[in-house]
Image: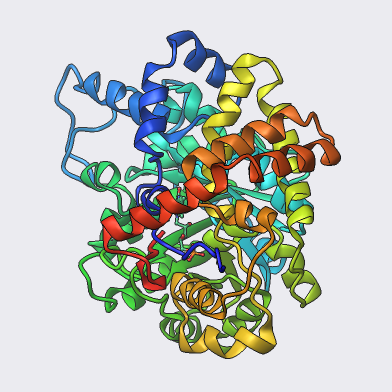
Length: 495
Ligand SMILES: Cc1cc2nc3c(=O)[nH]c(=O)nc-3n(C[C@H](O)[C@H](O)[C@H](O)COP(=O)(O)O)c2cc1C
């Protein structure tokens, strides 16, 4: 009997895709229940903290936000940030970054596949794994500039870079020039090679503060902000936008023009509007049109899951480079495939080896005591929520589909449906790795931890899990949850 689990809406990955800093409700609850000491130490040791911590920190900081004396209104109409530490200078009026720096930065990203900024997913151990697979350009998780300037340990931890990262950017969320300049200075001191300004984050907490995608509403204001930060920053500044906020893709051209006029080193375009979230295929035709209109490099972003999509979308659009988010989360070896121009299609055993390596990087990062294990378990099961969506997509079979069904999740859904229809029995290990159950993801993460770096041990533990009777239950629960959600088709996946 065919036991291929239908590719369904992974609610956790969905939330992760839409709410950058979210995790599962259960995990959020566990985190909230974690002893204060755990949270403190987890950030104080420089580890990458989960979004929930950042959100908590954000709300505390907001409560203490009211300045004692009125200040002139700023871009978003709120009061100025009264607590920018003294000793940090106002934005200077002349450009600090040199033309040579800009040219060298632009040359070093040309034709590359960049790793997208990914809150939670773009933690240091995961970025390190991507670098192992040939990723040359990495970006930090989004850093709230305001909280960084308050020396919030969660935000500070996000500046940390691994020595293996070749070209590392720090992504800032801000709508204030002085704040952006000063936060960029801290990022530069911490070793960043470039700064990226987040102008695409759609989530409510960011939007309501006038940050992220809210900056797309007024191109002239965006231009002033980008100019101010670009002028006052000694590193190249990239600006990551969506096509617009408000449903229409029309603002994209004007926004890219504003970014260029303001002196940015490059514009990164996630080819969807804020409202489209992940429901529409990224508009690479528009990305291409914008590249032809602009004098600065355009980095295209959206729906790249295979080496041939990277190749074809760059060729068709003429974009300077491309960026992938979910493609890397699902298969961190996408960078190797792009470098070699062929699909890798790792066996289940080879994938376990990759996941074991990530586990070892988490161990190095968080340490191997109980506290480190707890921190690791906040991340690794979350990663399995993406890993379980991996399917081989050989170009001769699926190349045409990449243009017919450019939306990443539609393609994965079609592949899963075809597998199911074929009725082929999959090995239990493969079924286990595809299992979407959160419980399974925790069990697999624990097994990797317990394997102590031994692949043989990890495979043995995985085999035990695959054969202890849980797999059928997990698959049945996943199928039932599909029915309850009225989901089950490929288009259902929106993460
Ligand atoms: C889990 C997750 C976290 C994300 N976090 C950020 C972020 O912090 N900053 C940002 O600019 N975009 C963020 N994004 C959006 C991605 O950078 C990227 O623009 C988007 O996923 C489209 O690319 P893709 O189709 O290759 O996934 C996030 C996306 C996901 C799935």
